[in-house]
Length: 237
Image (tube, rainbow, N blue to C red; front, side, top):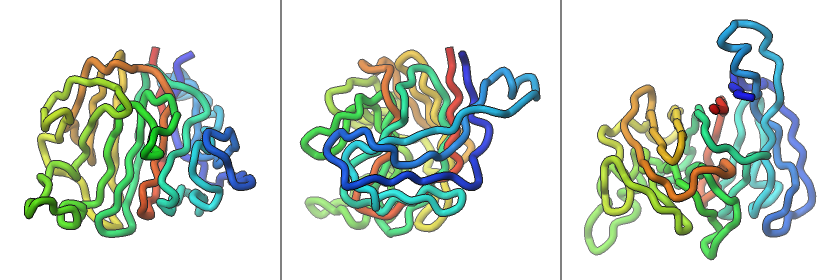
């Protein structure tokens, strides 16, 4: 059945367990609402299922819910994953970094199995705070500003074809992300190996021909505090 996320539950339940082992299946948080797409199209009943996120390789204290915000401390580096795998879907997600140069992202079509760097495979939708380019000067040169405005790339052996190549990555054609403390909105459309990314209301990036096109959605902790809200998933045929 095709489904839609319509709105976020304002008060969500957090279930935290003992320190988790690698690839544990502990429930981290119930955050979001999933409703049948027909109900939205027909403006009918909006009842549905909550979205559950499960521990992979972070810690219970890494994630907490404060009213309608999912707070990630960033440590240890790792991810949580969606309850189920998705193939064709639209994801709406809002995020803000709380530290200059903060690093995070979301993975789509992932196996949710961490590699040597504690992060999984899939297609990463990057979420970087704007000062990252100033804090990561290498060989006397700053990374290009495009790096922090919603790059898309395959990780863990996943191959993609970038719409806007920057090496093996795809860069946004317009710089639209906001800095520390400000909310950013990503709309991510994932269909049959193609991903299109809208940043703050405008589609500016994409990839195609992903070698992996079904899997979990992961949220990333990568060293800095980041907040998420209004996570909505529309499941497509």
